[in-house]
Length: 137
Image 1 (cartoon, rainbow, N blue to C red):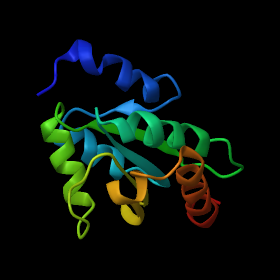
Image 2: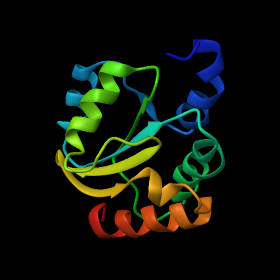
Image 3: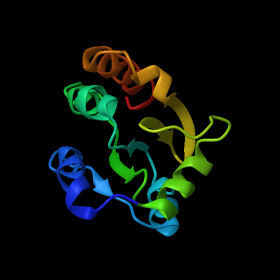
């Protein structure tokens, strides 16, 4: 587990733009039960989260179509919530960072770590925008 003071600024990268933090399995269940689309970002302390994932998620919201709900769990910190989110992302293996788009509780788009690592924030943003255009319109 990472110390709260270490991850605070990393959490704020997403919460300051409207992402709600989820801490428990019930929080995840409630978020995914909402009607419409929900983007779940599995946040991380790694460099690709800072350089690519969080900026890509932020940039993706500059689109005509966006998810109804934005939520995040933090790998290495919010174990219960992360485990619950990852179980909703099956058949994809656990990875962090990662991003999943759900529509009415069903997983419809997934970005695993290997889709994030080594790709620019712009590329990640464009990938998410395409998914938003397909599922959030």
